[in-house]
Amino acid sequence: MEGVLALARPWHTLAREQTGDGRLELRRRGEGDFLITLDGRVLMTSRAQRSETALAEIALARLSPRSAPRILLGGLGMGFTLRAALDALPPAARVCIAELHQCVVDWCRAPLAALTGSAVSDPRVRVEIRDVTRLIVDGAGYDAILLDLFVGPRGPAGADPLWGDAALVRTRLALAEGGVFGVWSEAPDAAFEKRLRRAGFSVEQARPGRGGLRHVVYTAIREPGTRDGRPRGQGLRRRSSAR
Image (tube, rainbow, N blue to C red):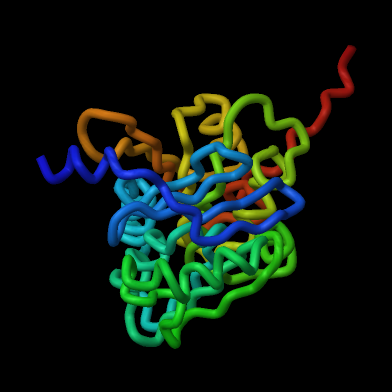
């Protein structure tokens, strides 16, 4: 009965920010029920975050033990993926968060902080107000790259800067050998899986939880003994001179 009453309460807007992507709003009802919307569309809610948490849990479970792993997290959201990552990582780990909007970081440091035990203020964390694409292009040697972005990959990618063929090869090369690429997706995407494999990743798919809306977590591994997005010894095929 208490849950039904909570759902009947109206949402109150705590903060809003006009961005290049549209108007972001943080809303709350009751004590710990929060919602972030973009132009009225629900981006995330504190009541439904199992797949965001699972993204870090599943991906980092596939990472071999390392004393000081370097993690790149694209998209902060309410901080649930970050919280799960920090809980799975050793004290010497370093986590870089790429977030486009400063207001989201501010919300995670203030009204949303109690949801994650102030994860964004953990000393292992560094926040960059930048497009995660640039950090992938400019970086190297990440032990894991986790992307928790809007709806994730879907539909034809073409030359998409995150989900296209060339982008996935760049992501692979930004990982250390044995590194993990974890992706949250709103729905399964067979074309994305094929592109991951073409880029040289081994790929696993999981759908956390049971019943209700079930998102997808993709885990892709840069296997040891590879270079330039292809297994060693698997160069480009020579064209035959025969007609």
